[in-house]
Image (cartoon, rainbow, N blue to C red; front, top):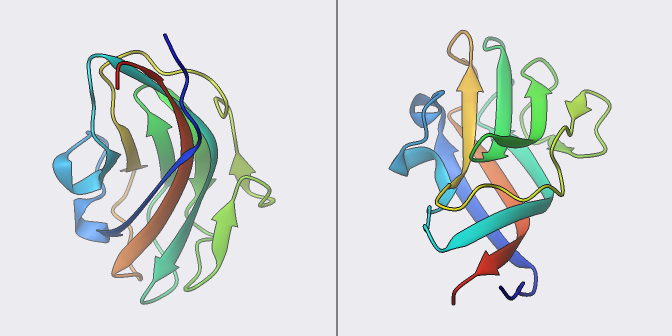
Length: 129
């Protein structure tokens, strides 16, 4: 299967829509059975206030977590990317399974403070066009 050039997806997601499950509201790139994704870069940014609750925010392609950030450093307007001191990048550059979406998720206590979280992901696609 052919690998494409680098794609970029951006979405501003309401904090109320950030959950553990992948939903249409927290999906940046929709699942496609004929495609696999490899996240090569990503960042997030809180908008509307500093994050004062919550446990962990992740950007993932299926089960492959590209960026994991404890909520504490997610302050209003601060870009938290792969080189941020509190970021963990366990599966950055790994191919996801086919049929999985790229999404931003939150685990633990519901985040308070920001109204939305901006998320940007650069990724490769392998599969049918």
